[in-house]
Amino acid sequence: MPSHSDIVVVGSGAAGLMTAITAARALKHTSTGAASPHTVVVLDGARTIGAKILVSGGGRCNVTHHHVDDHQYAGGSPHAIRKVLRQFDVSATVRFFRELGVELKREDTGKLFPITDNARTVLNALLAEARRLGVDIVHPWRVTTIERIGQNFVLHRADADERWHARRLVLATGGMALPKTGSDGAGYALARSLGHSLTQHIFPALVPLVVGEKSRWITDLAGISARVGVEVRSSTARRIVRFHDDILFTHFGLSGPAIMDASRHLTDARHTDRNAVLSIAWLPNLTFEQVDQALLALGPRSPAAWLREQFPDRLARALCLGAGINPAAPAHRLTKEARRSLAHNLTAMPIDIARDRGFAHAEVTAGGVTLSEIDPNSMHSRVCDNLYLVGELLDVDGRIGGFNFQWAWSSGFVAGSALARDLRA
Image 1: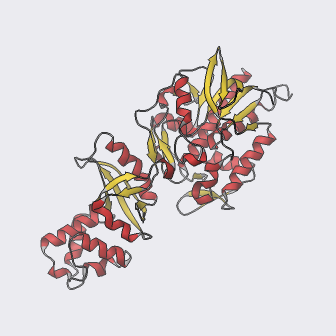
Image 2: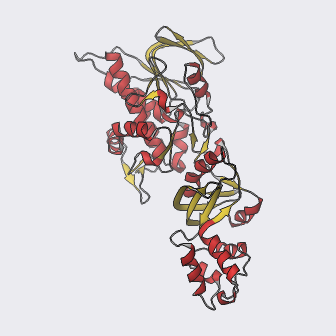
Image 3: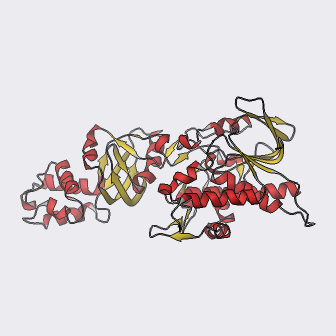
């Protein structure tokens, strides 16, 4: 194989494969109808390609969500994110995969999965299309350093005196989430070596949370799930974010969609406000006053009996005990202070969060290459000619539910299209 290529994509994840496929499709034929002389190569240091695609969505691959907009993302400029998403939206994603023979189905949550419920269907379709277009995927070929020589790039391989020359370079190395799949953060050093800057903080997002000693009772409820409201508030009680979704009690603390979505906001807030708090509204559709009145109206019934109508018995009892109340005690015998304490706990219980479970258990990375250094119309670097950056490497992270895959497809499509226009020009 040649060691000189027109386009070299570093990273064969979702964004990298999408970039290569889009560019190769656009370059396949020249305006005269002749085959394109341009070469597209993907380099990856992993022995197994597409590991992160295969483990996503519980092995089913949550390809996208039925409704995607910039409000579902955190990180860089919402305006820039919106520009990228509009160039390749959900309907375009559905069409793209249908063309590859992958039909998607929508679940009640709004998530879109392949009808096979098998992530390998998605990966195999992407790899087959890349092969059909003549894209060479070379692995394991780990890039350690990149030289800029004139307008071109020279990529050096780890532990070998090998080089790859590129006219156009795409960094699609991912972030640091799930490092066992190959996302170990090495791309950040490559981006910085080419003039890019990183956000001040790079940290796990969509990650389960470990409770501290004051909330250790939660671990005794492992296996129970509940639909609740989860809030992150500053130390001055200002609401930062709120999610209404399921949580899951675990042997270490809390997981589930609401917790995963809230996790990055809690970590981010604690970078500047160490006393930022995560709280749970067990009855998210009721105010404190409404819960207080409901408890008053129970009469001889116990609060635990009332709560068992909405929660498993173990959780109902734990919520009462957490407020210092005997679960079997009749409600009309509660003191005003005890009743109001329970009402407060049911509508905004602060949870002692010690830490998150780290990148090894995170689904995505928050922070990364500063988005202002990227042209959202092309994903072209504003600081280095002929360089493009896509996917999780950038300071963009979405909610759970297929939003991060949509960012990968969208940013990859924008970059691939721009690369083809650039080379043809």
